[in-house]
Length: 545
Image (cartoon, rainbow, N blue to C red; front, side):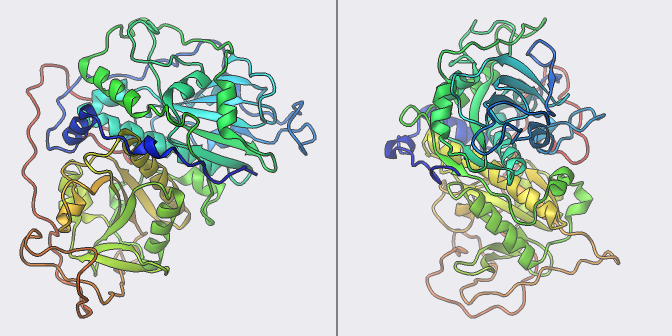
């Protein structure tokens, strides 16, 4: 079992003031400024040369660890097939793990010790063909199990989303970490780290410590490390920070092959995104990071992980019942207790904003009325959101948050949303992540201090329609502290989450209406001088805002 449930970061690691660069980037990504059009960037060939190795391996491996009897303990074929692999005989865009625009920028480097279905060594994983490319040997005496370092190649996401790309890259990485953790349990003990120092992660993965430095890897795509997942055989004591440090030692590792036509100088917006992510991922105060144990929600099975997909829009219009919604909010909270808060916006017969009820398995009402039309405007104008059955919202990350908090908030939001999506699938619900949000100051809309409580991620959830196609509606039990929708702007009559005095209970839901003021129309993008943007994404994936 892991030797600790969590390693606490040094107090100063998350409290340093935010840099001007980060404050400006947060303000820009949350503004109404729309990205300009850019040429479509096709997915490049896998950058690691050599023949890929199949991950299945039920033959005996020497030194599999205590109590393993020399037999394979961690089946990497199963773990990666249920998490990151593109299904066989598909174009590769629709995968078990969601990604903004179906671009899948996350890459996985496998640092394999004894006790796995591949021999020990450093590997790069190609999800399109479900193969691993060996890059070098393992350090002497490395612990059993596998350490997966997750990196991102930012170029395609930046070309697609412009200045809005870098939070989406963090969310995508969080989703990938959750997919690996869910697939790894219960066959292995799983620890997840969202705050290790980028330089240490790069060294462990055998990558340059400064990916944005010109000439570091001519003809190659810089990779930015953001998170790590550790899988160890059950019963083996895990020291994930020590294992990470051991892999970062002076071991030999292959480098990616240069590709004809690869960029030599990054466009300004891409270089800015890479620089910002590299800045956010620095954690020299506690380079080994904080490692938290991962669990799988009870109903989630391998079958649910295989069926998990972003749902078509027509499958998201019926609200789930109160009990199901409460269970999903509980999963969001427990998946990453260090992450942002979660609130649900529900339509149906009782439109309102709901949160978990303290000390019970029910829900409390934060504010009455239908928030979905405003949420649709905040989510890059995706109007289908106005008719979604329920929207789970991750919110927090003040505008002046330090770099460590910005990184952890977005990675944890993606991680929790990934866990909730798997849980929703197991419960027979449909879901679809929503990553792009502008002017989404939830706290200010509820009468709280502005700039302190922003929506950073969302998950639309819908229940299967009944046979007669009539929604059963959402049944709620209003608490005594609930306030109905105000007829005046929230600035003058706030709908506070903590009212000063209890109000009489509401027995009927107010008529659906917009909960928040209408934001100004988005600023149109600059006149495009390049080719049209990327083609429309396939059904079930997020569209470009």
